[in-house]
Image (cartoon, rainbow, N blue to C red; front, side):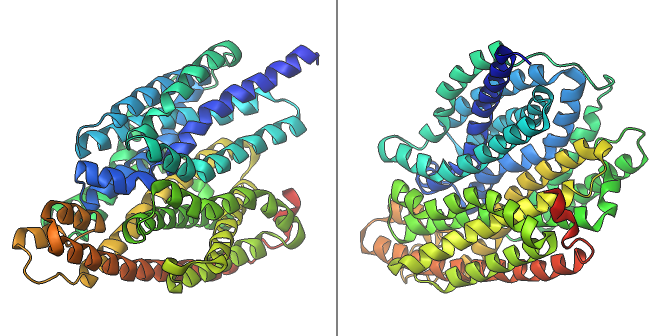
Length: 505
């Protein structure tokens, strides 16, 4: 192979990485901006959850359909379309005048991201024929994803030091303006491998099922919500998901091969991916609010505080490869989850007002253990998949990551909101309307205090900070218990997958 062809391949990789980076950044960059946009848009606690997790939830529901579509119309074409949608959505999000507009813009961005992610992996696999070079390229792809998640809060904090909250979205535009010429010049057209028959109905069924089910979860725990609306949403969501599953089981060419779940290792890997990504996203979002609303840190200070967590998660992947070779998948999966459970319990009991090396150490252990657990989940899925079903397994794995992020934010938000409402001790003498609006989330409490002013506002802020700290500890301890139980479940589920699969890593 000529040197010019070799150089061209790495230009393709550079273009793909630059496309992928802002997509990954956008999953975490918004977390430190939540307090700022909450006050600017007067968002309720439920609205904040939708702003955050509409992006990973829609992306998760579309990854499998978009991966199938890319095979049928060409990866380069769908990648370019995704770039355009993502860039437009970023502009709309940056200048959103209301919460509803911001949620819609984030959903628009998710459509673009769902087009981009499966195309980046497919282009890498088609560009690099040599197995060693392909492994290196895929490793760089994974490192880019981890690094993007790691620096997201720091980049967001730095932008918010000098600009308004919309800057965390607008920063995507100049990056995309640089990326588009690279893609047009270096990314080749690839052969169309699909048969041209793509049913949008299955994609819509999956998306409606996920969104309606999540809406039911959110509304079901919201005080004053309609029981009939919640029940109807749950029934619609579960019916749609059941219908989607039925169609996959009986279709000649299913969009998602559900027979993969017959393998205990694959089922365990999917559960691990869901829980690990949920814990990582939920903990980071909750700590970002605690640091700013309760401790009074700036967005940049909050990003710096979270840096050990995210950097440790970025380096956990390479560590996982060494550990898997040494002790096997069963031990790595179970021990990483057990370590994550212990660090979450430690953070639940720690005093963040006087945090020192102990808290930093807990964040490092949490980030590294969750990252190692995520790599173990990937090995569990891919090493148990027949070669001719690797594409379906890859789509399933990517969907687990994004769906886990969305569900984690939802689950943490529900427990946090419920605990906050129960712990909130309202100061006496507040107007009834103010007291009611301030009861459900710390963001709403701060917005109410801002409108109230005077000594009562100070008392209200103090009450909100105390309630958040109490509920924050409850959430972390609940997460520690859940992940601890999962560690035992994984140990049992992988009893036949101990050291065997470590040899494939």
